[in-house]
Image 1 (cartoon, helix red, strand yellow):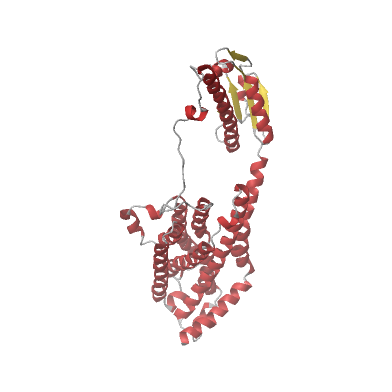
Image 2 (spheres, helix red, strand yellow):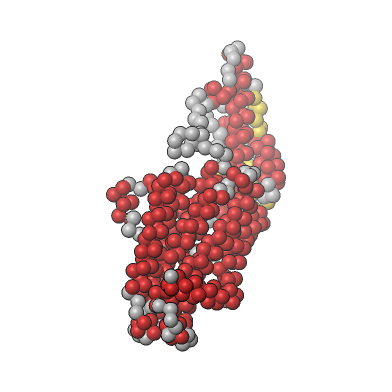
Length: 420
């Protein structure tokens, strides 16, 4: 009972100090809350403002009539369709008859219609070619290329329909253009792990879950910094001696600081999640999918609980080393090593399905607490609710166990007089 009382009193002191620390609250709460939406807004705004110059080079500039099929085709019609669509999408373009314009550094994408294009496009024994030159390393040129390819594909479909209809008329038989052009088709249906058709927006939900895994890397640093200031900082300010000389036992002092740091990390995690919701809201507007189909409140709750124990595990791993360092810089370096390990795992968790790893690889990784953090979210997202509960339970037990063990390694002398 006395231990609980001391922890409660010390927690009041720690939380009061935290509330007074405006800079810490600002960097831990407001920055995560506004950065992701700001990134989304800037991304959308800057993408639309990227200038792209496209050159359309018509080296054919001719018209050809196929007497057998009774089809006439000309390259200028292709140029007209390309310019109409490019204008609609806001691209800048120039029309030329000189292929050397491809070497112009200002040209991001060049569409070349070779000689003989009109003739080859109407024949039955050959195909016509259009050559696209895209400047390497220009991201906006990739989007322009996709637009150009879409127009060319549409024109190719229309021309093939005309050819097939002409053959149907000549042979006096009924031909369905699609059956002749694409006799075999595939259809992809997205299903859950149990084979049930996935709900609309499931893929975006999965993306949201992956981002939540990556977001765990941003919540451990503020908590680690708070622990460093709470131990090394108080030692340098000579206030640690006052705490130790109080009736409160040493473990209660450490517990209160760790819990306060974890609460700060949890607040950061909530702010991160809200920032992600705002980011996904912008994404849902761009994709036309309703926000309610993307954001899962239970997933946000699981993320918050996972973040709490992930932060606790991180700072307890670093605690024995932090208490033995002399200055804040050395303590920050040690905490940075621990958080970097976590960032590495969370970054890979964005790309890798840990839950799908072979058992001979996955089971040895279980000794790393961060792997359980990743598996909690990934398991829930794939519908393995029981596995998610198991991993979050393991994470909780490990983090609390590490806290107890770390506290037992600390004594008053080492806390007050650190090794140089």
